[in-house]
Length: 223
Image (tube, rainbow, N blue to C red):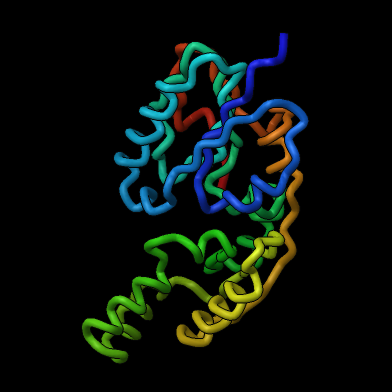
């Protein structure tokens, strides 16, 4: 009898990177709009609805981080639920929570970008364009300067995204617009490979038993 599939519920900011990984067992993907991150309660309800449909699977893996507390309060369905022990998707794209922490130790005011992030329907850059079209260039720049007041640099994470060249140019444009330093760093797919193929154990993943609730404290002292 073939193995039941692993159900991977993922933010679409990582869609291209996850689909580029060859599964070693049956996998079913369900991608959730990154735009829901603006409303953590709505994101939680969307994830709760998707989890409720996860039947006939071996396990569910949430390709999310804590994401502003949006995943806290979710209940594992009648099968084990696994989630990376990360604050958001950036450590997953970098391949290591420690790399992410080191970059923030170097400069706390670091804003991270990736190709998938820049394809979202409501990114910071698309918001700038919307304000510029409605109110003009000067007001759009003032809005952006206020939003990015705490940041000193932008770090673009290379992930092999198929449209990365264009997105890299957009990232440079955004940094220039804001007067921020622009750096790039190579991501690694090690953590994403484990999201798809396992193992889903150790310090990198949280396991929630069937019927149990995922708590914010389960993530421990992450940064």
